[in-house]
Length: 360
Image (cartoon, rainbow, N blue to C red; front, side, top):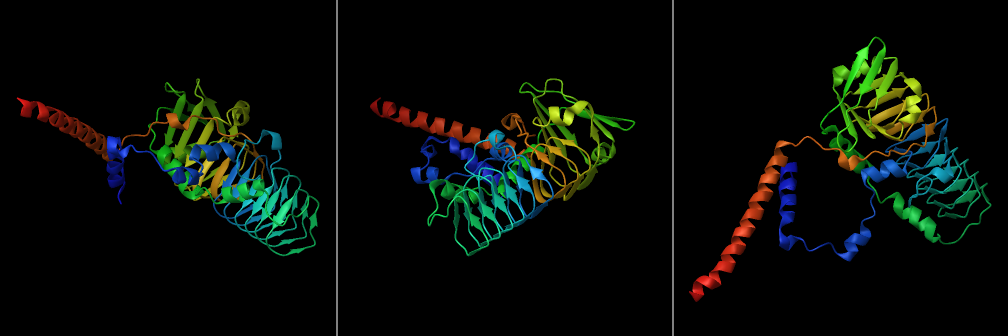
C-alpha cells in the first residue's frame, strides 16, 4: 500500500463510526517503545553486531552478537525501563554488566553480571552471575552467586518480554525519516577551520539544521564546532551525507553542556567515524560507527566498533514539536478529510430535515 493510500485511510478516522476505541486485548499487547522513548531509555542501540573496548554509562540493546565492553556504569542515573541493563539478542562474550541485570538471547561466555537478575536463553560458560540467573541452556565453569531458579522471576520474564517488544530498526528508522523532513530554520557557517551552528529556536524551542552533501562535507572537515544555541532546547541536525569522519573539537565544553539537547540525524550514512569528543546523540540506523573518542549522548546505529566511552546524556529534546515539511500527499489527506467531514455533516442535515418535510 502506498503512503498516500495509508494517509487517506488514516484521514477517514475522523468519522464518528470509526471512533470506537481499541480492544483491551490489543491495548495489553502494545508494549513497543516509541522513537522518543528509545532515545530516552537507552544509551546505546545497535541493530546488528557490536564490539567494545570501552564502557557504556547507561542501558544497551544489541540486536546481533556482542564482544567486550562494560555496561551500565551509572546505575542510579539510568532512566527506568522494562528492559534489562544489557540486552543482547545473539551471543555475548567478555562483557561486564555493572547493574540492572541482563537478557542474553544466545550463549554467554567469559562474562560477569555484577548485580541484577539475568535471563539467559542459551548456554553459559566461565562466567560470574552475582544476581539471580535463569538459564535455559547448559552451564560450565560458572558461579551462580545469586542463585539459579528453575523458573524465571517476574522481573526476568519482564526483561525477556521487553527484549523483543520493539522493532528498533523500524521505530528508529521511522523517527529518522520524520526528522529529515523537518523544516530547517537554522544555519551553519564556515570561517577558516571553524563551523558555527547558529540556532533559531521556534516557539517550542526547536532549532533544525538541514545539511546537504556539500554543506556536510565542509562542516565535517572543520577542526572546530561552535554552537550559538540562542535559547533552543532541542537541536536537530539532519545530514544527507553517506559517510563522514568527524574530528572537530567542540569549543567551550559544548560537547558536554549541549549533549542532551542535540540529535544528529545521519539518515543516509552507512559509515561514520568519530575521532574527537563528540556532543549529542547519533541516530544513524544504516551506519557502521567507529568511535575512537568519547560521545556525550546516545548512539543508535546499525553496527558499532567502540573504542571510546558513551556517556549518559539521554536526549531531552521535544521531538513532538518538530514540524515536518508537508508533502503533496499530506495536502491531499487534509482535503480528503475535509470532504469526508463536510459530506457527513450534509448527510446528517438531510436526515434531520426528512421527517419535517414529510410532516408538512
